[in-house]
Length: 607
Image: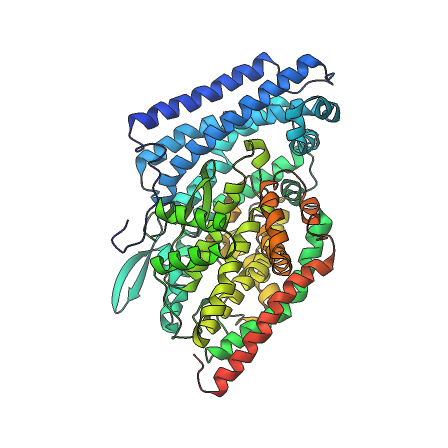
């Protein structure tokens, strides 16, 4: 627990500490298990081969290999999360960085085994194997995906070299970005005193009720990014260049094609969703103009996007957030509230913003049914919603606990399903029990989030498409990244924001651009929001029936295409109408917000 009462997460249930004998033994044991798996793969020639007949002996080999592979992946998941828990909360922890560096080559080794397994599956008659092996039937979807992926592999030596070079390539640039930005200190005058604040703390000032404070923080942030832009630009250039090269070598059409494959959706689904999003931009611009009116401004600047619309909104302590979340999760099910109780009681959550800690929020699985949540809690309803969102991920992990590691792989498109659902439970509950001022604040906060996920995510998608295309020719300069970012913001926010006060360095802010293995780490969030809203509508229509099917859906997110899983609820993802209907929920909120703003302005209650 920190001095300000915000919890730090506890991972001592795994090992007492990074410097403990238990950790060292566990570290060595896991590495040995990876090496033993290499021996097993070598002994059974699990690698690229010509077509292999499905005979009894091969079925036995498959069953043995997949069981051992799943077990090693499970143990690696826990060790990886354990080390990651130290690195992400204090990037200056030299011991954590040392252990992470030692572990990375082992992850590369495991990644090479994964590629070998995929290549081996490519030589098998997968359907015949599924007929003859219960293990194969249990992993049928993953095997069919591997069969397709095998057709996009380079030669074994090339794949092995690419995996080994990743440590000094994309992963190294990603690590540089994470360490560099988490330690970035920004000079800022606060109450007449010049201070050095972590970048995360400066960015949190975007929520400050005082416009001058927000403006100063915005300008200080931009200056800090400008001073730091050269290494960050080198990182994004290198990562996108590497991805483009591998796309070409593996004979994919584009990085987007790989992303669609990884996310278990097709281009038709993506295009339907993005078209619906584009149709909604005028509605979101109306929201932004109404917010400007509520704040008494002619137009919103970028630094007004997260401004509170009322000085009378409730402040939420972390303890109040805990009580509220548990109470209203219980209105859905005791299983959901029980998960939340355990997370708070057992210190699964690291909530304190501090220097060296990663910005933002995430949830990671630690052990079967057990997760850890990183947040940078702010005493507002937004902070409460973020906790509910991340606890939704933990609930998803709980429902995946009975699956093997290969069955658990959940694409980003479906990974947001439970988080959006849980966040919506808390939003609806808060709107029902809050007074008029708080309802106004909460409604605006919900629209603020939706605007980020639909409008800002669209800008990031446009930006990343442009970067990938231009990076095929050459590296881009800092100025070019800035202009591409501004152009994407103009296309999406349009007249909803002051065009002279946008954020040219958002490409440096968002860590999602710097993961070499997950390109286009943006539109899945929109998918998650709109799919989650669609599911929530089904819940309201028939709560009891929904609850029967919902946990099974969460347990199955690694076992089928998104379209097939959505079909269980009568949802057609390739139809524009589904996405429009989800956005209609947001449109109704925008209309209600405009009405409330009009009433408040008429009554002389604008910000």
